[in-house]
Image 1 (cartoon, one colour):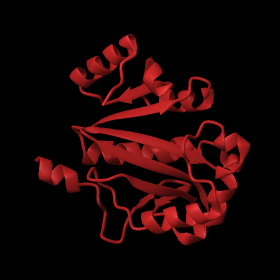
Image 2: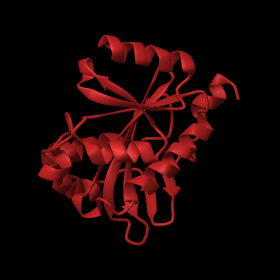
Image 3: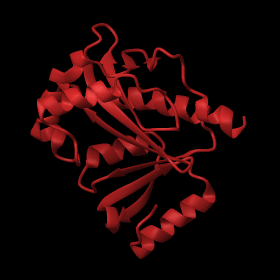
Image 4: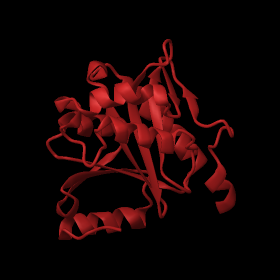
Length: 196
């Protein structure tokens, strides 16, 4: 697969994002999701480890309006709603941020759906699709070292715990990272340097 093909791969259709798992649909965010997003983004348990998330209802509506037509791509960041397959009710969100050959993923799930395997199910399907579509891209995720549940999830997903990066105040996890990039990341962690 050449670079042009790789950059457009994984875009299932012009109608947007749709990935199905046993219990879930990963789809574009929609205006109907605003109330649920407002609820969990303003819940102390869900917001505890989130940085910079919009929490005001009007800001969430604006974010949804801006992100409702996102597509799977490495050309720009995109946002995915995770919804129950039976009801299409949103239970969480995943944000994918591609940059310079590396895909970062962030996620938040509604407090009523913690510890029930939904995050693992959704991320397993999404990571597999992204890796198949963009095989030369590495994956990196950042989490606070106090976020034990997120670190356990990333480990279960096959990410490697690279250590703590002081410049980002985060524990760094990677998967499918090319050896040279992994070595650069390890040096940055050891030296406390900022990574690009």
